[in-house]
Length: 234
Length: 293
Ligand SMILES: Nc1ncnc2c1ncn2[C@@H]1O[C@H](COP(=O)(O)OP(=O)(O)O)[C@@H](O)[C@H]1O
Ligand SMILES: [Mg+2]
Image (cartoon, rainbow over all chains, first blue to last red; front, side):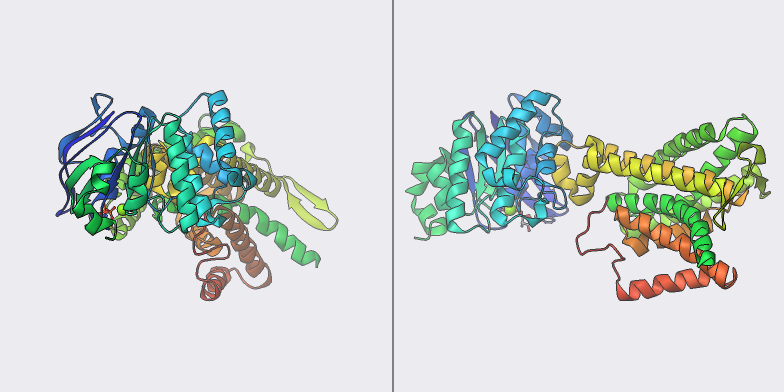
């Protein structure tokens, strides 16, 4: 479904991604794990068009999207749950969810997706008039996920959804990710929490300073000595 | 007491005008963090468009207003595309200097085109009536300006709070990157912001024509400055702040002229501004993370 082919991405003189390639098969959960500063966020921003690769291609359902305007990407079926949630803080929960469906015209579909989000996250329903900035970290993460779902994406990019959350909430979020995937959305999950990510993913990539250094099925990576040492604390 | 009420009434229409101009400053700042110093001059262009549509085309006041608002909406969009957009990723000081350049260009181009001569707003377009209400003197101009300004502000509030476009404007001002991820076009949103802000300024320009009767190519400078101050007073980037700041500024100014002297009115107005900002640097409505559009 998604194929990143040898992209080079720069911040000025900083070479942040060095010929990075990865593939996400339709219906799967693929995780990209790596330490802080490895280039995970840069990878997702490149797929979403917020950053422009200098070389390489990003194929989505057979078309190169690396030159598509960033605001057009979500319309192609890719939404992102950005790092740090990035909810619209002074807008209400409901307005945040509406923004997720900004490009959609099918009123009925939007209504039913809104109901689905509220069923999935009852706390958001209770707080739908409240401004997003007043929500707790976990609730904001749910809102960011709900907002991305409102675009009815085929592929969801998630940037460290467990960041800063208590262990119990992290578990809840990962259950939600599994469930979203089970209902047909393909997922590319970026995480520093390698343990959790590998436990739900089908395939995994390990990124270090802008390059993929390891890839394989989750089982292969869980059992790999390198991964154990560097990312799984043993 | 009666005297005080009378000054208050006089101040309301002037304040409404400042509030309309202040809104444009604050909206543009909210979305691209730029003080659009040409904004007062856009107001001046609006006054001229209104003047010519009345004096030359013989339109009535409402047609003149609409014509001025549409022309200035286009002018605002054009200025943003030509002058500010290329600098969007440059330093803020570069954009600010450009804004001052655009301001001077509009002033001196109008001086060149129309000469420095004052134009008198045709009395026929808006015949003055004064009403005596319980010892207070109210003119139809004051009522017209105040009511129209309030209608425009309600319309603006509706657009920003309720419409898809208004929500997109708020989203872009809060978090541009996240807004793009929603599919919102930043370019389009910025254009709309300039269009709305400039059309409010144009309405204010026509109102100033009615209020003071005369217009000239440099008429945008002082009201522009005062409206800018009003926007800062209310908390730059915050819409209700600009409205309140504008009214405060207008009322303060008429109070000082009424009780003291017109000589001091600007000094006192700006003095109060400095005081308020010393106590509350983010302005009356300012929070550390306020809503910016
Ligand atoms: N806006 C930026 N300007 C300059 N360098 C950046 C910027 N954002 C990220 N980087 C650099 O790019 C590299 C990758 O960053 P990032 O993709 O955010 O890493 P990760 O998400 O894996 O923590 C880091 O070395 C980081 O310092
Ligand atoms: Mg990151």
